[in-house]
Amino acid sequence: MPTAHKRKKQPEIVRSKLIECAARIITEQGPNAVTIQTVADAAGVTKGGLLHHFKNKNQLNEAVSKYFIDQLDAEINKLMADDPVEYGRFTRAYINSAWKDVASRQEEQWISFVFYALSNPQLKSMYNEWMEEKQKLHHDTDSDEMLQVLRYAADGIWFETLMRAGYQKEYSALLSNLIRMTYSLEK
Image (cartoon, rainbow, N blue to C red; front, side, top):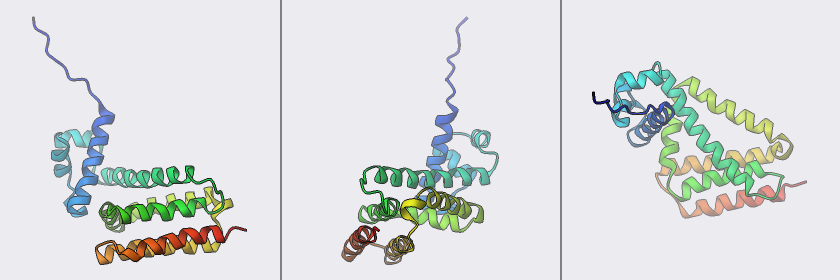
């Protein structure tokens, strides 16, 4: 009697693929394009297979938001690890992560995430919780009000690139000046 070939189940790989496909759909087509069926199709699984991992669209939304926030967190942590100056380290990493997205024209992903998060208060609160955690974690080195102003300025420059739909030469100089200012604030 021949034995049937059984594919080994890899639930974490399938779950990750579903999240990545949903994130790609958000980036390429916008948040409204995300449905259980479109994500399942993009990942090559059945709708039931997706619902095995995520009971509903809200759970999928949470996982995708966590995915975007985890990417931002990993980038900031990497930049902080490369920065030998303790004072303002989080602020410089935050500004540099925005600069990197702007300079490489990778901001589409973040544009989509912002609109995605703004459309859902629960997702917006995930980002706010992340930022509050970061501010508490780096209170000793980045609590100076002027450092917060510099982070807000970086947000403004980043938002300006979104509104102008493209990178402007002066943004590099502005972001570079923000970084330089983090050093001049050191006490």
